[in-house]
Length: 154
Image (cartoon, rainbow, N blue to C red; front, side, top):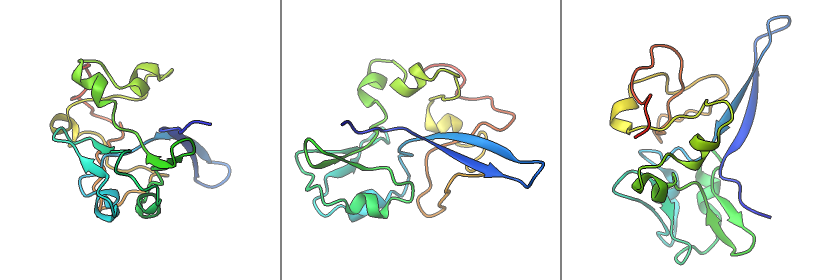
């Protein structure tokens, strides 16, 4: 049993006969105002200088409070270590000028990664089926139209 950092959610919109199904591949949104950081009693969850939110397993008590407060249901208990885990943005790959694994492995090319300062005004901050929380300010954008920044690998 392993922890899956990216999950696909499906959402249906519209009414018959104009029904639309959309698949959303979601992981940690590395929110600007992350609840997980605020509620962690051991301070095991921290934001790195580059914006990625990471869990220090050595400090984690495995209490699950971070998961209870995350509006995106992201942190997961690793059954082998009894500590919480979540997507760390593949910061080790980014530091080597590589794309995150999910971007590299996405079979459709739907996932993109770029500098947040360049892409935060692109696309849309929410779409149907996405649990957007104005309070957390997720660092995610959905390609709608007119996307210009973040097209190239870093």
